[in-house]
Amino acid sequence: MHLDVHDLRDFYYRTRIGRVAQRAVRDRVEAFWSPGEVRGQNVVGFGFAVPLLRPYLQTARRVIALMPAQQGVMPWPAGAPNVSVLCEETLWPVDTGFVDKLIVLHGLETCENPPALLEEASRVLGPGGRALFVVPNRSGLWARRDVTPFGFGRPYSLGQLEAQLKRHAFVPERHMAALFSPPSESRFWLKSAGWVEKAGRRVSNSLAGGVFLVEASKEGRRPGGASVKDEVRSPLRILDGVAAPAPKPARVRPG
Image (cartoon, rainbow, N blue to C red; front, side):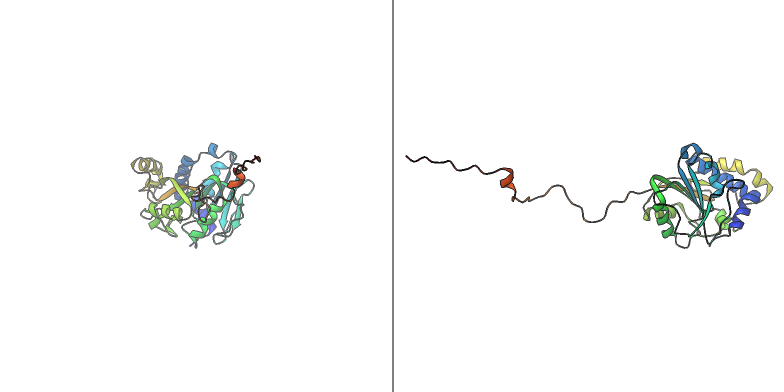
């Protein structure tokens, strides 16, 4: 189930709880990839990843925000040349191997065909590239309330997400959690959200948060077919005479 792009925009940019969530998740993304790390690289976001892409606008070679047709698209960033593109959910207008860093937010858990989405993510990721998947924590509070976008779609446990990535030629490398504060709009929780996030990271970096962030690389695929050994057990002797010609018989002089 996809949310409308206007609902996502309003949550992240026009509500206090949305701005808190944006800051908490973006801090974790920058802990994986600092803006300096992506200098000269191609950074692509899928779903509604624009709240996490802004730090890379000044340093990346190119930033592209892919938004699925079921969700809709909006121009982004405000006051600058647009980088957002409307696309099919599992057919992206991106060349194979083009992407160095890929961020998926509100994309995997709402997708109608997650395996095809992961295949497309693998296709566009270049050699040495990294993908970062941000999904709701199945046992977290944020997945249990539909007052935020994290309450829609299929939430994951960490094991479920990593298993699904492995089935589609991804290698999970690192993981973190975010959104340790409850999804509440009360003034107390909004004001203390920063402190709660720092405390939550010290207690648990993977279990107690409202969302998981899993960084994955693309597994190198071996060519299919039967293997061919270098050594041949019973080599043919057809060319032995060429390699080592037999000596000519000695001539016998008549007596």
